[in-house]
Amino acid sequence: MRLKIVLVFVALALILLGYWFWHLYRLPFVELEKEWQAIKAAGEPMRYEDLVPPIPPSLNAATVYQKAISALPTLSWTEEQMLDDLWNNRPVDKEKVRQILKRCQSALALVKRASRYPHSRWIKWQSDPYSIQLRHLAPLRLIARLLRTEALFHLQEGDVDKAFENCVVLLRMAHHLWEEPCD
Image 1 (cartoon, rainbow, N blue to C red):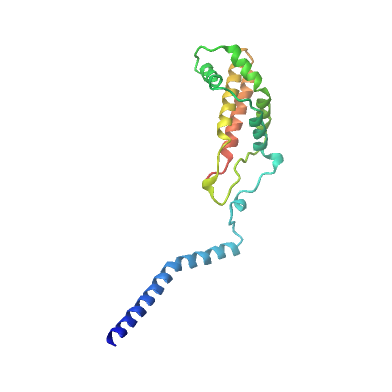
Image 2: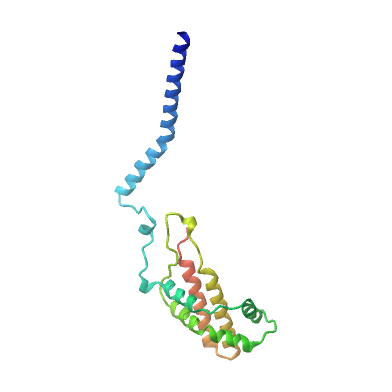
């Protein structure tokens, strides 16, 4: 009989202790929910879309950059290496580099047009920010290398204005990538 009474008291003590731990665990979440509701009631921004307004497609350079990436022909590793060799003053067949640039002219024209847009937003933010993919960076790097190479050719031909224009396009592209809210 005495054992049953002790077991009942132990069981009650464990139940009370469990409730107390559950309450302590739950308390910060209850407080957080209250604070969340107070912020929401005050009309403060609660989502990413509330903090950073969307860019209309007519003002978003990313859509035109995407078309340029699609128009970009596939370059072999050797062709890409030629672009770097020219930049680093290594011997290279300049006529082959000119042919590469000629094949890429439609993509470069689109990039030059896109660089004049006021904004660029590539990333579609999701509830899981770790799933965001940055697939546009590698092709844009190749486009930047092509613009740089084209600027070198313009300089060698004495056309400083076109070379300067390519440098300005490169700066605008960099600004568009910098504009992306990533913090």
